[in-house]
Length: 575
Image 1 (cartoon, rainbow, N blue to C red):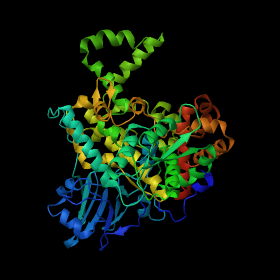
Image 2 (image 1 turned 135 degrees about the vertical axis):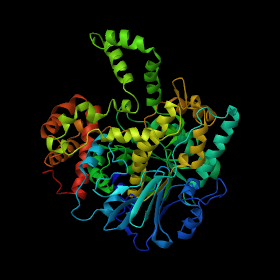
Image 3 (image 1 turned 180 degrees about the vertical axis):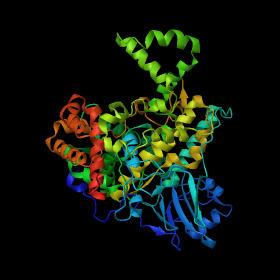
Image 4 (image 1 turned 45 degrees about the vertical axis):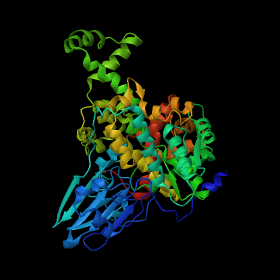
């Protein structure tokens, strides 16, 4: 495909586009694809809900939201002046709000609620550097909040109440149902979820070649009788390209397959556009490849596309789950042996590689979850005082991200460390990062996107699976793979997960145009007083060349922040 074809129409909708609704009046917001209570499983969506549909669904109050399936965002003006807002369990549809002089204002995008001259929130910008996104309920703008996933809010008589209508609850040991029965139920739910997400248009899906996207591609053919149109992104760099797996899945399921190889020139052209399209800084490096993939599908006549996101987080597929199980083993060693023999013997002695690895293991294992998950957090590894300017640091509560994470960690009702990690990832990995990436990039290209893996039925099914069906010893997503062993190609079941990884650091070192864009962007950011200028100089002149894959991530995060600021707050400076 000619790269020139990747220019999307000027009127393509931005991610979560929407104007503010002054809910002190009569305006309502209804977004997404909610499903009627009791609607037959596997039936396709029957159209947009309106006020009466929502009033019928909520006749028993906000607690009834737990039975509403599908992505949705609603801001409903009720009799008596009360306003009710809610978003789905994963906040696939977004809703932001602020209160001005007793009037509640609501919009799908945070920037729609930012009045001219509004300050940005330094704590939110720190969150961005910490998480590479700004988790709810905070947004980049002071006074503007985002409704967290699975939450509702009621505004009445000048008082705002925000609460969860749903939180993860696990049956850690399952019900002892035989494997074959669980397998049959699971595959039925998969077919139903895919069928529900299709519309009358061209049946299409993203295809990375992983287990989730390949499963969706195969299920489309099974439930619709049509060849799925599949769309894949590649990178002509060793260690980054997974196109061979995508082609394998496409051949196996006889899809109508389409490919595009991203180039450094694409990044130079589209980085400013993608960075500016989000309503607040967003640093997931897969957003730009996802956008190019979505434009390829849009140019091919697709209006709605399905993604495979969620399978890893529901069924135990991320490598960190196995890694944390290994760290948890340290706590099973008798405390006296750890404290009086192992730690005095190993921690002070780093003379050999083996001892250094043992010391690193002990140091990480002693750190409790969820704090342990940040052991390799990039900005913490580099050092806050090394990266951040003194005037930025003095405005921050440095441990606030850890405080917020600890609160989310406690929400899940479970006795299993693994299930608690899964629930934690439903918030931080899916709702705050991966789903905004796909929704934002697809929306920018003019596509609607669906997530079959995230139906209520599959989510509830995963919560009832025995823990060792998700992680069996150190085997990731054991049940998912075994249940689909006769459906997916063996090579895909056994492959290591990678996804749409972007070789940004490698390209930035090699490509003059991309290097100039990054250098100019970080130089401009350095003038804003957030990041130390000497760190930026060292990062671009020394560290990036030493380890492009590692330090390229920090260059990307800073560059995307600067391009977002250039669009949304061009004059922003710290005094």
